[in-house]
Amino acid sequence: MTTKKPSTAEEEYIAREEAQRAELRRIEQEQAREEAEKRARMGTCPRGCATKLIEEPYQDFHIDRCPTCGGVWLDPGELEHVATDNATVVRSFFNFLSKKA
Image (cartoon, rainbow, N blue to C red; front, side, top):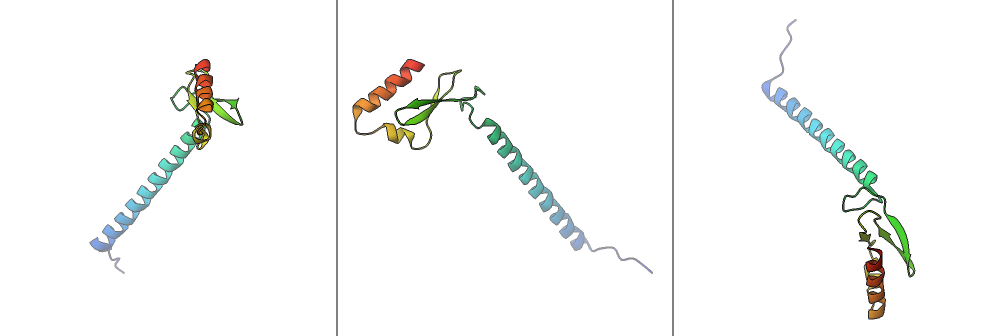
């Protein structure tokens, strides 16, 4: 009984499939690593201080402040909430920020 060797085309197909699976695994691992890093940075200063942000009340919402660099971070929609047509509100907000820096 003789054993037939797979054809070159079959070997190439198998090699391509294995390479695609390996690339998919690499991409999935990279995505998992990036997601883990993102979760680890949640709540820390975006400037890179690696300091946990402190929530401070301002009017009827909270702002995030870095105790290390004094940076102030607003969540989506908070700037629009502050920047109303009332210039006094905007001025008082920026005064609030400048006192803490």
